[in-house]
Image (cartoon, rainbow, N blue to C red; front, side, top):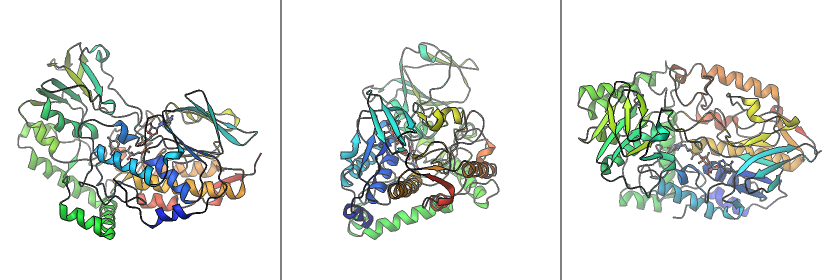
Length: 500
Ligand SMILES: Cc1cc2nc3c(=O)[nH]c(=O)nc-3n(C[C@H](O)[C@H](O)[C@H](O)COP(=O)(O)OP(=O)(O)OC[C@H]3O[C@@H](n4cnc5c(N)ncnc54)[C@H](O)[C@@H]3O)c2cc1C
């Protein structure tokens, strides 16, 4: 697949190269690729993208469980600078998204920057030389003037904390660690968890499993999904008329944008909640099942999920929904609090990720030898999710409080990448290093906390919170507000120090 580039992509190719700070980007998912393209478009070429996997793609290389797909339409869940007019369906499945990211790496000539199969385990600011020493898992150290972390939010899997799980003798797989060689045909399978991955994998497993038991702690709010292949006519139109795919992208963006109701009293909130209730009513006939699937927390407090396939699967004869909490797992059974025993051959943990442990497995040591993890404790915070004072020339994409409530995260990643490119331009121009002002960072986070307190996310428990209870993943405004705030580096927010 070739990604159709529009003008800015070509501008990148034509841009004169200029003296480049040495930039290390950690991670080659959407974020890392966005950062590389933003920097290349500004003429910076001394880039090394360090990726511990054996290829690009991040989330979309790792998550290969059956049914894995995006839940933002593909024309929007893709880069603005690399529109793909050949998306085969409204919501692409994982293989097509991975293909897309591979094409971006090819079309934007990013492969020559890649250092694959290599992890970064720590990095330290070298105050004498004003650079970062980036320590790799292969024992080498790379020197960088600027480091951009694009390690994502969904990299550390979370298994459920259930007595006896480790002693289970059958197959145990997390959705994000799927083993495609395991054949579940005809097997008695349990799925634990009914979040985004759970509702995608359940319909697929229902097609192959002999018995499928779904263990639910909290039901998701669900809304309709226009999930379909594009017709031949549509594909021809997108191929022949570039503006048609742009119009579609804009239409989708506007729809998501207008739906970004984040406060409980927003008039739109009641409307969408009612739509979701009707959707459940329409697709689940049985009163008891419908009751079990009715959320008892406010709409949008947790991630809202899409499509009726999950509801349909739960009503198949060999599929059961269990809502009683799991008490323990034995070598071949799952036992619930009320004494129900379910014999299983395989357990699929659709239990998500350690979303609040930002930069997990990566020790970042800034000026005065301070560790970023020590600074954060269990409360990661950053200025615009990108920078922390005392950690000069270090930037994060998809950092604390940048996850979007309703729109495509790719938009946020591109905005963050633009800010990084703006900062690197400044560093290239003036030399030295930039560090966000501590007072600016503090004020920003006080304001974010105050704004978060108004949002719907405070009304329930979710993966948006850290163990302290603070909402650490979410951006409490629209994606447009984030793009405006990150448009460029504002001088007054940063300290720019000269070279050592
Ligand atoms: C199943 C699933 C579906 C999703 N669907 C959507 C959706 O529809 N819409 C949406 O907006 N978002 C969705 N998301 C969120 C998704 O993660 C983001 O949209 C996006 O893929 C994040 O890209 P990223 O580059 O920031 O992170 P990632 O894709 O996670 O990439 C990070 C990369 O960094 C590498 N890395 C991490 N640590 C190190 C290290 N120490 N050294 C070297 N390399 C390292 C990883 O190997 C990985 O390749 C989904 C997430 C999942 C899990």
